[in-house]
Length: 223
Image (cartoon, rainbow, N blue to C red; front, side, top):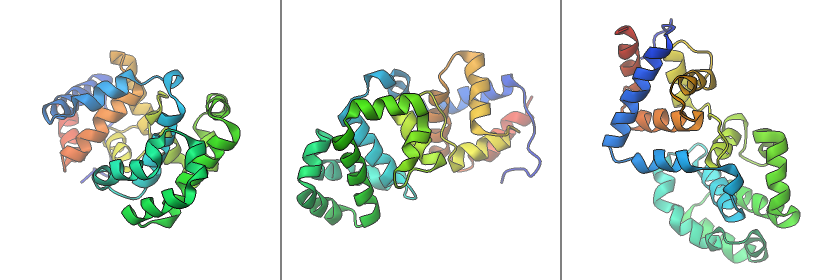
């Protein structure tokens, strides 16, 4: 359980907790996820990357990531492996039938087509420029993209942001911080890590360690 009166902690406590979490994540075989987030650069994202990551975030909304991971390659095949928004739009009927047979959630499947239609209509360069100019707020016009999920997609396409999901909210609260962003920025400033990488480490740790909030509180109380 998270304490109702979380202990405000110093940066050295946060850094110690982060290193503990990273050690656990790497030992569990997720070093590739950390390395991938470290390497992501928004200016290198292409149309295929954007379509794939947008679909991933939509499908994961309200659903466990592990469930979507099992189906995602087959769903990607149904969407022509995200090679072209125009082709996906042109072949909407067949793509939709194949995707719906794999994942029976019409709202999410149609939301993916909405993204593809926007990219096909406006061009990916325009979409990318809009994200540069407006940040994650631009993404909130699309179905299934609210305050947290828009930041999730922004992070997944290389923007250095933090997604305030339930795990990060519990962790930041446990350490006495007002938001996951504030907590991750403190760690980033101390060790030079991107805040998106800090987010990735804490999130993955939370999926590995069931009692992660209590474990972090234990670390905080050791100071």
